[in-house]
Every structure is written in C-alpha cells, then in structure tokens.
Length: 300
Image (spheres, rainbow, N blue to C red):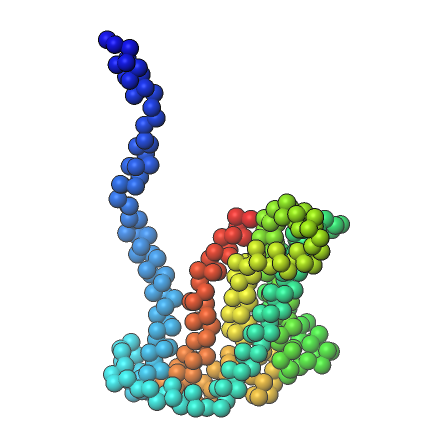
C-alpha cells in the first residue's frame, strides 16, 4: 500500500459527514396531528364562528325567513335591512361616539402604559417590585367588580353623561395588561444600546423616543389593538355613565335599537352586524401582530 493511498483513506475517514438527522428531517414528510385534535379545534371554531355568521346572514333575510327556517341561507338575499341602518343618523352618531371613545382610550393606554413600563423596566428605585405587583394584581379586578364605586367617583367629578367619564376609567383598567405586556419588551433592550446612546450625548428622553419606542413596537401594536377592541366592545361602563342617547356608543345603541324594533328581527341583526364589524375587522387584520407581540412578551 502506497503512502498516498493510505493518506487518502485516512482523510476520507476523518472528513465530517453531513448530518443525516437534518437531511432526514427535511426529507421526512410532515406528520399530521391526531384527528381528535383537529375535531376539537374545528368544534371550538364552529362554536365561535356560528353565532357571528348567523347574525351577519340574518341581516340579509326577512323576518318570515328567520321564523320558518332559522338556520337556512338567505333566499333571496335582502340588502334593504343594511341599507336602512346605514341611512340612519342614529347609527352614525353612535358610531362616531364609539370611535372617539375607542381612539382616545387606546392612545391613553398606549402612551401612559409605555411610560410606566419604561420606568419599571429600566430604572432601579424603591418599591419597584411592589409597583409591578400592583399592576399585576389589577388583572384580577375586572371593571364589573368596581362599577359601583367607580360610578360614585365619576359622579363626584361631574363626568356623568360625558364621554370622558368612559374614556378615563377605560384607560385606568387597560393599564395593567399594557404594563404586563410591555415591561418584558423594555427589559430585553440591551444596556449597551443605552450606554452607547448616552456616550453620543443622547438624553434619556431622546433614548426613549428614538430607541425604546421603535424597538418595542410589536408590543405597542399589541396593546393598542387590545385596547381598541376592548373599548369598542365595552358595554357595562357606558350603560352606567351615559344617560342621553346623543352620547350613546354602539353597544348601547344595539340595545336601544333592539327595543325599538323588537318585532323586526332581521333589521336588529343587521344593526348588530354593522356595530360589531369594525372591531371584528380590526382584530382579524392585526391578528398576527397580536400573536407576535404576546410571544415577544413571553420570551422577554
């Protein structure tokens, strides 16, 4: 055996072989889950989607169709119910009130929550853990539990039958979720970035606006979406605070409309569909943003 042949054999035995596991995982067909898992998932999806479809499709039907065949498709399709609602000034007035309340509440939740989360995440001070625990404890107290004392406070402030009487409490009750989600995002920002910014002469306020806000944008978008949808669908607080129909939001408008047109079920379903449509579309469009923001919060 020549030296060249021996050397070639030794080199061939010492060369790293490609990982068979990785290549095998790529070539291996993806396994489907258990049929029972898919059945349960489809069952939950059906339970959630079926009422929405019934309301939306019911708006395209007549009252006789709903009475004779409640689960059937519209035949023929009737668009007059939706057109009547869209021509109503009451609907657009309540839509404007809901939009003002939702946008103002969302802005307040995001701005105040981001500032509070920045202080808790980046500063060391006394009772820091107690403050964070206080916000975490706020998750255990829904608005329904505190509605009576909350009404008394709003009454003392003179904000009854005022949109501010709805906006301010919604901001307060939206802060716990915002802080819990945003604090991990802000803690995950490396200290080296803040030190480099300080060396370049950037103030803490400049670091907050130029670095913190862009880096925590997934979490900001998440809390903004949750705040908007929660504010749009809020019913119990406007029910206690708002008295005049001119200040009603859409959830209250649905109740009033259903009382006025109790015999016209199809038109009530059309009004309900249009009332829930903005929040439903908003949530569906930004669903991936919500999942990404919550995933980042868990990782942080």
